[in-house]
Length: 183
Image (cartoon, rainbow, N blue to C red; front, top):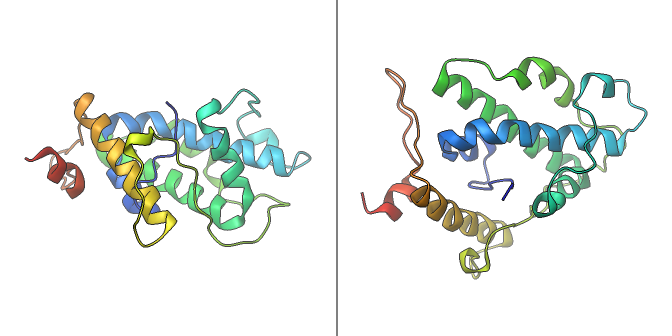
Protein backbone atom coordinates (compact mmCIF):
# COMPACT_ATOMS: atom_id res chain seq x y z
CA UNK A 1 0.00 0.00 0.00
CA UNK A 2 1.42 3.41 -0.95
CA UNK A 3 1.00 6.00 1.75
CA UNK A 4 2.36 9.09 3.44
CA UNK A 5 3.88 7.61 6.57
CA UNK A 6 2.92 10.17 9.23
CA UNK A 7 5.26 8.91 11.95
CA UNK A 8 5.84 12.23 13.73
CA UNK A 9 4.39 15.75 13.60
CA UNK A 10 7.88 17.09 12.79
CA UNK A 11 8.76 16.24 9.15
CA UNK A 12 12.44 15.86 10.05
CA UNK A 13 11.73 13.33 12.79
CA UNK A 14 9.21 11.64 10.52
CA UNK A 15 11.92 11.18 7.87
CA UNK A 16 14.35 9.80 10.47
CA UNK A 17 11.75 7.19 11.43
CA UNK A 18 11.48 5.80 7.88
CA UNK A 19 13.32 2.50 7.51
CA UNK A 20 15.90 2.10 4.71
CA UNK A 21 13.42 0.50 2.30
CA UNK A 22 11.03 3.43 2.70
CA UNK A 23 13.76 6.06 2.49
CA UNK A 24 14.46 4.67 -0.97
CA UNK A 25 10.87 3.93 -1.99
CA UNK A 26 9.04 6.98 -0.70
CA UNK A 27 11.19 9.79 -2.10
CA UNK A 28 9.73 9.35 -5.62
CA UNK A 29 6.22 8.84 -4.19
CA UNK A 30 6.38 12.03 -2.16
CA UNK A 31 7.94 13.87 -5.12
CA UNK A 32 5.04 12.80 -7.33
CA UNK A 33 2.54 14.06 -4.75
CA UNK A 34 4.28 17.46 -4.83
CA UNK A 35 4.47 17.51 -8.64
CA UNK A 36 0.83 16.50 -9.05
CA UNK A 37 -0.13 19.27 -6.64
CA UNK A 38 1.58 21.85 -8.86
CA UNK A 39 -0.05 20.42 -11.99
CA UNK A 40 -3.51 20.42 -10.45
CA UNK A 41 -3.35 23.87 -8.84
CA UNK A 42 -1.39 25.74 -11.50
CA UNK A 43 -1.94 23.95 -14.84
CA UNK A 44 -0.40 26.86 -16.76
CA UNK A 45 2.59 27.25 -14.42
CA UNK A 46 5.99 28.00 -15.89
CA UNK A 47 7.75 25.35 -13.78
CA UNK A 48 5.58 22.44 -14.96
CA UNK A 49 8.01 21.62 -17.77
CA UNK A 50 10.68 20.91 -15.13
CA UNK A 51 8.49 18.69 -12.94
CA UNK A 52 7.51 15.07 -13.26
CA UNK A 53 4.54 14.81 -15.62
CA UNK A 54 1.08 14.83 -14.13
CA UNK A 55 0.22 11.23 -13.48
CA UNK A 56 -3.57 10.94 -13.39
CA UNK A 57 -3.25 7.31 -12.30
CA UNK A 58 -1.12 8.30 -9.32
CA UNK A 59 -1.42 7.91 -6.55
CA UNK A 60 -3.16 4.63 -6.21
CA UNK A 61 -6.60 4.52 -4.62
CA UNK A 62 -5.08 4.30 -1.13
CA UNK A 63 -3.20 7.58 -1.53
CA UNK A 64 -5.55 9.53 -3.72
CA UNK A 65 -6.33 11.49 -0.59
CA UNK A 66 -2.61 12.29 -0.19
CA UNK A 67 -2.62 14.65 -3.18
CA UNK A 68 -5.96 16.09 -2.09
CA UNK A 69 -4.52 16.76 1.37
CA UNK A 70 -1.26 18.25 0.02
CA UNK A 71 -3.14 20.70 -2.20
CA UNK A 72 -5.72 21.71 0.44
CA UNK A 73 -3.56 24.34 2.18
CA UNK A 74 -0.14 25.93 1.91
CA UNK A 75 0.83 24.45 5.30
CA UNK A 76 -0.07 20.93 4.13
CA UNK A 77 2.04 21.37 0.99
CA UNK A 78 4.92 22.77 3.03
CA UNK A 79 4.78 19.83 5.46
CA UNK A 80 4.78 17.35 2.56
CA UNK A 81 7.70 19.22 0.96
CA UNK A 82 9.63 19.23 4.23
CA UNK A 83 9.13 15.49 4.62
CA UNK A 84 10.41 14.97 1.06
CA UNK A 85 13.36 17.32 1.79
CA UNK A 86 14.37 15.50 4.99
CA UNK A 87 13.91 12.10 3.39
CA UNK A 88 16.38 13.16 0.69
CA UNK A 89 18.78 14.20 3.47
CA UNK A 90 18.30 10.78 5.07
CA UNK A 91 19.06 9.10 1.74
CA UNK A 92 22.30 11.05 1.51
CA UNK A 93 23.18 10.33 5.15
CA UNK A 94 22.44 6.61 5.03
CA UNK A 95 23.61 5.73 1.52
CA UNK A 96 26.23 8.41 0.83
CA UNK A 97 24.65 9.49 -2.45
CA UNK A 98 22.12 12.01 -3.66
CA UNK A 99 18.77 10.76 -4.91
CA UNK A 100 18.02 11.65 -8.56
CA UNK A 101 14.89 13.59 -7.62
CA UNK A 102 16.91 16.05 -5.52
CA UNK A 103 18.82 17.62 -8.41
CA UNK A 104 15.84 17.50 -10.72
CA UNK A 105 13.15 18.84 -8.41
CA UNK A 106 14.49 20.66 -5.35
CA UNK A 107 14.48 24.19 -6.78
CA UNK A 108 11.04 23.64 -8.30
CA UNK A 109 8.95 21.89 -5.65
CA UNK A 110 10.38 24.20 -2.98
CA UNK A 111 8.00 26.85 -4.32
CA UNK A 112 4.48 26.75 -2.93
CA UNK A 113 2.13 26.21 -5.90
CA UNK A 114 0.17 29.15 -7.25
CA UNK A 115 -3.54 29.06 -6.44
CA UNK A 116 -3.10 27.12 -3.19
CA UNK A 117 -5.17 28.29 -0.25
CA UNK A 118 -3.16 29.90 2.54
CA UNK A 119 -4.04 27.92 5.59
CA UNK A 120 -2.97 25.97 8.61
CA UNK A 121 -1.93 22.36 8.69
CA UNK A 122 -4.95 20.09 8.58
CA UNK A 123 -5.15 16.47 9.64
CA UNK A 124 -3.43 14.27 7.07
CA UNK A 125 -5.15 11.24 5.58
CA UNK A 126 -4.87 7.99 7.44
CA UNK A 127 -4.65 4.95 5.17
CA UNK A 128 -4.00 2.11 7.56
CA UNK A 129 -5.87 -1.06 8.56
CA UNK A 130 -8.61 -0.48 11.12
CA UNK A 131 -6.92 -2.65 13.71
CA UNK A 132 -3.97 -0.22 13.76
CA UNK A 133 -6.08 2.92 14.17
CA UNK A 134 -5.83 4.81 17.44
CA UNK A 135 -8.46 6.87 19.22
CA UNK A 136 -8.69 8.81 22.45
CA UNK A 137 -5.44 10.76 22.40
CA UNK A 138 -5.27 14.54 22.86
CA UNK A 139 -6.13 15.41 19.25
CA UNK A 140 -6.72 13.94 15.82
CA UNK A 141 -3.09 14.38 14.71
CA UNK A 142 -1.82 12.40 17.71
CA UNK A 143 -4.33 9.64 16.90
CA UNK A 144 -3.09 9.60 13.30
CA UNK A 145 0.57 9.44 14.34
CA UNK A 146 -0.12 6.66 16.85
CA UNK A 147 -2.08 4.71 14.24
CA UNK A 148 0.72 5.02 11.70
CA UNK A 149 3.27 3.98 14.31
CA UNK A 150 1.18 0.90 15.10
CA UNK A 151 0.96 0.05 11.41
CA UNK A 152 4.63 0.83 10.77
CA UNK A 153 5.82 -1.23 13.72
CA UNK A 154 3.98 -4.27 12.36
CA UNK A 155 5.22 -3.63 8.83
CA UNK A 156 8.83 -3.26 9.97
CA UNK A 157 8.69 -6.45 12.04
CA UNK A 158 7.04 -8.43 9.22
CA UNK A 159 9.53 -7.14 6.64
CA UNK A 160 12.69 -7.27 8.75
CA UNK A 161 13.25 -3.52 8.29
CA UNK A 162 16.66 -1.91 8.76
CA UNK A 163 18.03 1.52 9.54
CA UNK A 164 21.51 1.88 8.03
CA UNK A 165 24.31 3.06 10.20
CA UNK A 166 27.26 3.99 7.99
CA UNK A 167 30.65 4.31 9.67
CA UNK A 168 30.35 6.90 12.40
CA UNK A 169 26.60 7.25 11.95
CA UNK A 170 24.27 7.39 14.89
CA UNK A 171 20.95 6.58 13.21
CA UNK A 172 18.93 3.91 14.93
CA UNK A 173 15.32 2.80 14.69
CA UNK A 174 12.97 5.15 16.53
CA UNK A 175 12.45 4.33 20.20
CA UNK A 176 8.83 3.34 19.59
CA UNK A 177 10.01 0.65 17.14
CA UNK A 178 12.61 -0.65 19.59
CA UNK A 179 10.14 -0.60 22.51
CA UNK A 180 7.54 -2.49 20.48
CA UNK A 181 10.15 -5.03 19.43
CA UNK A 182 11.11 -5.73 23.06
CA UNK A 183 14.77 -5.40 22.10
